[in-house]
Image (tube, rainbow over all chains, first blue to last red; front, side, top):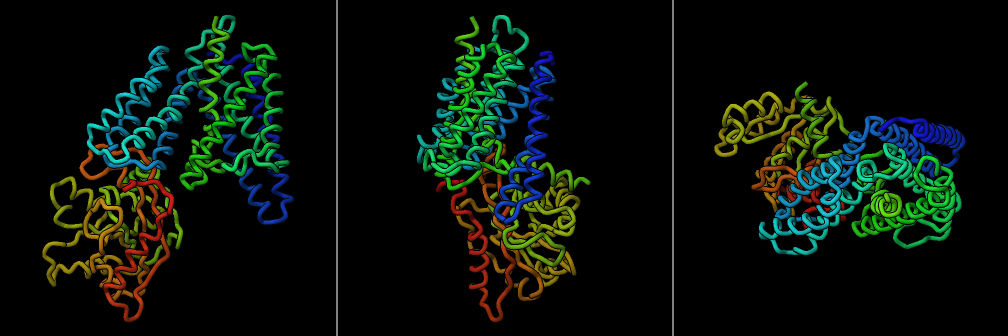
Amino acid sequence: MKLDQELMWLTGGVVGLLVIASLIGWWLAARAQSDSTREVIANLNARTRAWWYMTAVFVLALASGGIGSIVLFGVTSFLALREFLTLTPTRAGDHRALFWAFFIVTPVQYVLLGVGFYGLFTIFIPVYVFLILPIRTAAAGETENFLQRIAKIQWGLMICVYCCSHAPAILTMLDIPGYIGENGKLLYFFVLICELSDVLQYVFGKLFGKHKVSPVSPNKTWEGLIGGVAVTVGIGSALWWATPFSPLQAAGMTLVICLMGFGGGLVMSAIKRDRGIKDWGNAIRGHGGILDRIDSLCFAAPVFFHLTRYYFMN
Amino acid sequence: MIQSALAMITRLFTGATPLWKGCQPEIRPRIYFANHTSHFDALVLWASLPGEVRSLTRPVAARDYWEEGFFRNYIASNIFNAILIERKRPTRSNNPIETMLNAIGEQGSLIVFPEGGRFSGPDPVEFKSGLFHLAKKRPDIELVPVLLDNLNRILPKGEMLPLPLICSVVYGAPMHLEPGEPKKVFLARARQAVMDLREPSHGSHSS
């Protein structure tokens, strides 16, 4: 992975956005009148600060070559799975299966990704783990709510580990003619679009939001969705030069990422609502848990990866 | 030094973020009493306290268990500075209540598990009477109920390998013995105070 000119431009753009966001936040905080406004602004500024850190970590990992990003996403998967399973009821009989999920399944998935073993990477969790974990759980002997329990563990692994691992898979498993050695930029593009889409939907929702998309989440409005997606698609197509796509293709890919990401946020909100919680954790100040930050990315990653692989690898 | 490092590792691994619901961490005579489901309970509660409070807070543990073997002995006396009490044959000379009161002194605190052992049921079992006697002898001590949640999932009874799940340590409002309050009523009220700290929707064993 080389840190080429285009990667520097992408990073410069993000740093520029963060500077602007920090200045706006500082200005808003100075003129906030009521307590409730101050609270919203304080949360906004905490989010911006967390973005500075997350950007720094992501860029450093990318600059280290592929391995840094793989480790970063691996750790992220582990922490997300931890948040998911903490808030999911399991029983003492699931202990060994859960131990395997954390300390065998998650590392193996990322090792397969690191060595580029594509065939096993795509079926390891959906086939082998899907069949073997329930066998381990059944052997432990507790049968109460058996199907529900194994379904929850498998679901957590699919979202937090399998789907999430398709983002760094962009680095190791896509050989796009004319784009060899430049995949770091494609991963950057993907993560940037995912997060930008989240942020812009939040901003448009806060500014203009009136009509809720679904009773599941009060923060998801049609105004936020349409405004956020439209601007993100604009930005995504304007960044076509960093990708193997034409401007029109970049717009289409961005739209897919935005819609999958929105859907991911909606699904994870439904689970949170059912569990009666607002956030998955408190790992990232202002944002909630790790899973709150990456829910949209998890849903968008496999679709983006496979669309790119199918249409652009040959 | 070892203590701070151990506390940090514990917080990192268990994700134990303390939630001070009913009071703030303070240096003053206090007894933190909590439910007991896992071997890690005392460690996690102790690690969740801020450094300066932690150094003045001593867990109370059973002498018969912790004096057995060099390793346990070392941990109990050198790392936790634990107060070891006789639970099998208390006599006038080794009266656990006196030992605990001496340890509290002017600004110390204790960590106790009034169930008197580890139990894996959904609710804590009935409290032993020690808490009542302590409250009666030293009414100035604040009794702080603490709920340790999710720890039984990290290391259930009979398992060797801990899971990296996130647990929570919830501190409730300090309570005192009411004038003339009977032992039974007080102990039931203390037990209820621990259970009341549960969040209705928190994931744990569905049993």
